[in-house]
Length: 239
Image (cartoon, rainbow, N blue to C red):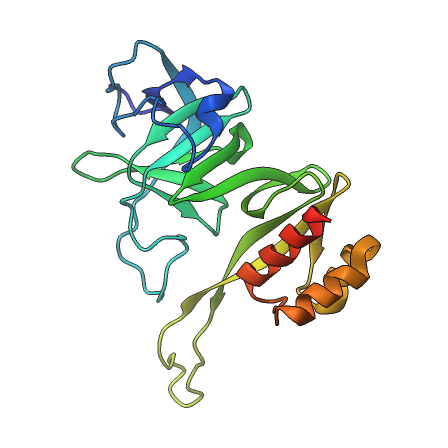
């Protein structure tokens, strides 16, 4: 079959019960074969994206991918709430997109267009599409979600270049990939970047500041520790 800027995978309109994520009842999502065709379901469709080269060797230490290997099952949903289940997936941090490695001899990689994806689940982690700026959307990891507030994490990559020997003009060591993250808080329909400081969090929860402050002190909670921060948000939501 001719390669184009489409990948053929099994497609099924899903009800809310299929959209519960890794912990929910998602077993009824159809499974693609990470090739063309496959699966036993009669519903077929095309999803826009592009073929990319599988660069197995690089002169840079580290990787732009979130996971060390590709043995990951992903459940992907578009904005029509149609779900796809694919094997051999990974998240490309540099390009903010999910990719699937095809089951062919060359292990070709197919990159999905992030603009067409509303959310996806991979390795018990949820990513959702959010507008981080005017007209700019990005896939963010869900750290905490509630009606009052939600916390998201954006992964950011950069290359730290090796120093150069001034005598030989040769690099000392290798360039390496560095992965950092940026946190976003969503409250009252507004999404904004935040720094993990106690004063920032207390200001964010200002209507219950006194009680939250006592809870933090009583339980020796650390703002920059993710599990403790979730504990604080859960307490705030219980008030």
